[in-house]
Length: 464
Image (tube, rainbow, N blue to C red):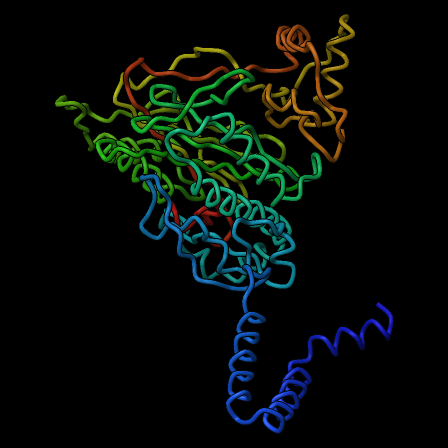
């Protein structure tokens, strides 16, 4: 900006100069027309000043959250504009990394490691020194967790009966891309948005042409992720609008919290499963005059998370004796502690049309004969790597990443090639996981880090 422009801007925005000019005008009016006219002039001046002070919500202005979500299943402290306390806009538009460019990122919930033999870590100088070496990792997971909190808080404002699930997912995912500043494999969405309804427990997201509408009596599990440099935040909650499902939702929420409390360095994974099951199965729910015990879905588990690897090898059971007694949690590991409760049989099977896919982390090198398969694999490698994806993303104009593909990433007539990649073991299909039809399932999930001094529930929020 030049000096002349600067001078003009200062002259037009300096309130002192405005006051002087308006006061001079008042004096002239008094001399010419008397005191009555001067009083009218002063009133008009006050109105002008009020107008100058008005306007919309400013960027960077810190406010108190005030908007409550329309759904059940969240804490009383949940606000859909949670992020305005950090100076975020409503709705959120500032990328989270920029929002916290000059201040520390919010930290998760700290809990001590469970075993008495590990309590020394909290005050150990050696452990604190080791933790300082992990600052880069912690910064990435905390950034991803804050993106997740802001995206889900925003989503909680518009998730209401009557919304089309396809529209809901698109809106949530676009906000995820915006707040994380999607940059291909460097940072972006961790996996497709799961919005499984009722007896469907996991791995459902709408394919193109799926016009499913959310109903008042539905129980929906929202499960989505963010990733920064492959460090995935995996967190989920249950949406309901009818109070009759409250005991089911509460059972699963408290079981997840029990699993988190039981977790810690050197803890046996099977003991975590026992703690979860004890809490979950102490609940029952009455639906339409019939009482159902809440059951753990015994073949669904939490899991360890690696870099660009959503399931890194260890499974955290949600029932007693759910794995070998020798498998334990270790320092430096990241886990998704998730639990599923059901009014049905407590066991899921693959059913319905598949939407979720993921390249195998240890995919074999297989010569491909179909040119279409080679083309699709190339697209998957550069756009998703070993992160999960869905058919909706392949059919976007950007093919799943605006940064990598621009508007020329859309995949056409790809189903044959996708099936071929699945058949040869390069890509794994993950169909929806369903309990008995007519039953209801619920889910809660958090990502925790096994730090040297304590465990940090990085995805914990004011909502759940």
